[in-house]
Length: 275
Image (cartoon, rainbow, N blue to C red; front, side, top):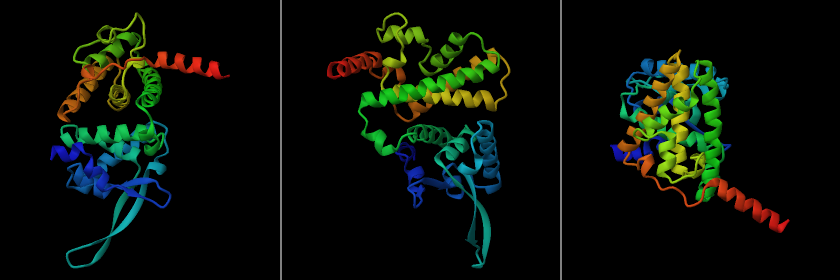
């Protein structure tokens, strides 16, 4: 069963594409895959996801579309039942608000989070990118994510941002701080560790960042101490998910030969040469 989820087959098998090429999922089809057997219970999760969407100032009606379907009963009578047409982002929010004790929920969170980020450019475009291009793309998303996370944490009273971010790194990297990661990678003093990560490592950190921001908002966290604890817990859970999926631990992923800053300098030199 786990191998099937690793390949993302359940989520892909129920994916629909409309006449404009937009992907969508039906809540009634997603429900059994996320191991919910009762629609009333699942609709409560959808309601929480809608609230998360509203709290992020994102249009609910664009991501959660009410639809009605005809369903046959045992006596062949047809009754109208409620359903939702969901975007990938809506599925991501539903997974976020699902029962975290279920392994499939963690896997769904990983799948829809990564795919949602990739959807900011088309999947075809993303897959055509070179590894270095993917690194640039994921690093920029990670920086934007960190900025948004910092704004949320600041409102909760976080002042020591080094400690706050190190809490997340410690959870994801089995106790390593940002300085520890830099030393292991052999970086110079104050060299940006994000510039020296491959795309897979950046995606893992982007997931940590987005999940932490959602947890800070969802769990009504009120203090710097609680925020640091939440960041560590999210990092640890993502690490455990990677382990369950059979993936490489972040600290075991190779450090690229060239940093993104170095690649940017080389690109700028080339442009000056031909201009």
